[in-house]
Amino acid sequence: MFKKYDIIVVGAGHAGSEAAAAAANLGSSVLLITMHMGVIAQMSCNPAMGGIAKGQIVREIDALGGQSGIITDHTMIQFRMLNRSKGPAMWSPRAQSDRMRFSEMWRLTLEGISNVDFWQDTVVGLSVKDGFVTGVYTAMGYHIESKAVVLTNGTFLNGLIHIGMKSFGGGRIGEKAATGLTENLVQLGFESSRMKTGTPVRIDGRSIDFSRMEEQPGDEYTGKFSFTDTPVLRKQRPCFITYTSPEVHKVLETGFHESPMFTGKIEGTGPRYCPSIEDKINRFADKTRHQLFVEPEGWDTVEYYLNGFSSSLPAEIQVKALHLIAGLENARIFRPGYAIEYDYFPPVQLKYTLETKLVENLYFAGQINGTTGYEEAASQGLMAGINAHLKIVEKDPFILKRSDAYIGVLIDDLITKGVDEPYRMFTSRAEYRILLRQDNADLRLTPAGFKLGLASADRLDRVNNKLEWIEKVTTFMRTTSVSPDQVNGFLESINTAPIRQKVKLDSLLLRPQVSFNQLINHIDFLGLFTGQIGEGAEEILEETEILIKYDGYINKEQEIAEKLSKFDDMPLKPDFDYLSLSSLSTEARQKLSRIRPATIGQASRISGISPSDISVLLVFLGR
Image 1: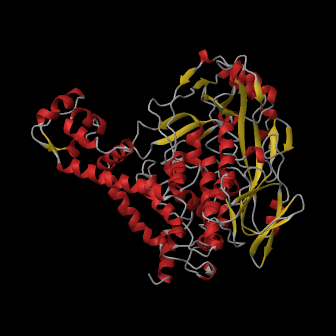
Image 2: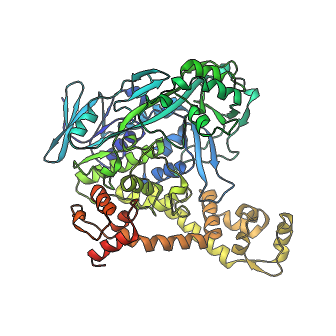
Image 3: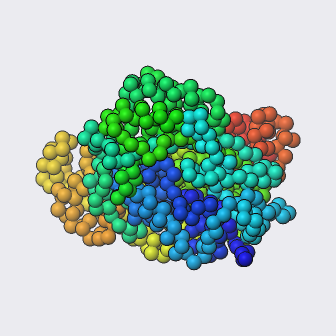
């Protein structure tokens, strides 16, 4: 009934969808197995893509030739660039999405890839021979063979939903949990554990009084995620802001004795940076209110998402508290908030390619690795799909370093440090964030995507054109002078010191009060020159401005990255006997034996490994 596939992808969430698309677009025959064909790439929690650091990841996925940015651009209903008041290393794009259209477009995209086949079923086990995965077993009783398997099971592995004292199995509310696979993996020797996440109530927008809330519009000039010709958003739907109060907190506290989080019913560790409302009240008892975001789920639906009100309290308590919030006094809900516990597999059991160390050609991506967030999952799926394809066609793996991409930071953190709570990406996790900006993701990664065969020639042509114009504009700014009479009126109007003699244009741009657009508007010959750029002018000028303003910082960070990269080029044998090196600390021997780092650089980033331990390894390597 089934042919033998190159790659089977288990799970069709954000990780599974990117994995299937990447592997198939590279030429592998792919079978995507999902429990529910109607919710491919479902936005299970908030209807949004991007955000702080997450927006950088989506742009990196796009630059490599992935799909998430394109689909977000086609289905967004609002766009905002976060952190504009800070430096460009912190700028992060975020979009509200139409939940139903996002899922629909992902399905249509996958259906449009001829190498992708679909099967609706539940995978209950793997077939493994001589240390290699050879296929999967399904609940319907089928054994489907493949050369590689990518597991992207999300929150479905033994998923358990909690609403107050009520608990029932499920991967999402209304969808059954996946059983059998965890037990099979544990039998194969994998270590598993439990994590917890949650989601808020969904509200009927017809029952919301928006006049009692603060409106939060999108940006006046909307951006996008993809570096391709995706549509620019012309109209937007607003979000709204409201707040809890001491009265709301008191009502919520009356349900604490029935909270599965406080009674010990929930064993899994929850996300530190996205706590439930009851956890916020408990942890931040001095706060009299908490901000809530009322977010539309799409263009046409009346359903709203209450961001910041995640809860597993009894439904009656949730509604009672809801009715004390400004604008929600008469709110009707579509469903209550709930918590969900699920199995994950500590990611120190993985290689940089996301292939497992224990079973060859088996890859894990997404929440199965202990991460949280669509963007983190999608990036792992992309990398797992790429590397599964490369492995079976006997090509070198594709690995991103910490200085290459936020995706590189994410994977290095996972496999080197592991996780003890759901992992979420932040700009603070990246030591090279001045290099890893959202604006230059195409310059950093599209050449690599093209070399892989995932990014098109048209994408590479765009990058080369962008680089050529950045060089032209930068040279013009550094070699062309402007006189006092041409610019002093403008400088005085923005309260910055006038010039007394001719100066180069780039020196004016170094002033924090001065922007490129302002100079173009006030210096005629500069406007004439930049007017020649044509398509992509806005991106090119923004990139050039950043490179001129932050040249010293960028060069310094690049030098540091190059100095430290030598340690990432020093390989360590995967079967090395660390326990025999008595000159290493006991903790180092234990952790190095468990994690088995691929390089000296990775070893140096393991918690508990000291500089003296690294010195011992360098001596042993003859360095």
